[in-house]
Length: 210
Image (cartoon, rainbow, N blue to C red; front, side, top):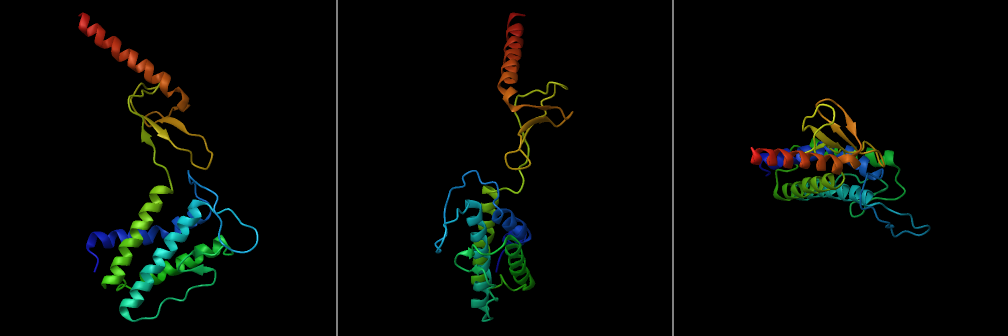
């Protein structure tokens, strides 16, 4: 039986699974994508790390369903064509079908409230939500702006400049003031920081001379 916190994490992982798998299976925005291929006859197609991550989430979710079936004596879910409980999604499966079968599996797991009531199901649920958390950290669905320390906005002169990541692959990264909305090229960061350092050093020297 899962504790309340683990159950909340498990349910949160289920809530985001379909969206995350769709994002990963479509290519994601992996910083370390490398060429890999599946072992099937014919042309060897490159497989991105993000697509392998989608496979991993599917197999871990399937593991929850299998563990529950094993512990309860109920039959396992029907595994749709184009999927494998060991390898995830087969190369022949279209993205729309990936989303559909993932949504169906999530729905079947959510529909049974007793899925985590036994040791096997609870253990598999923890492994699953940790896998979702790991892949979400590797391939975030959205990047959150981060404050740039010691950088003053050129317009309002406030220390409210944030680094805003691009909204799409190969998009433009900008520095934006969260107070007035002014935007700057990140390449100007070092120049502005040198100016601020000179300003601080001058103020310190003036106080020391007073």
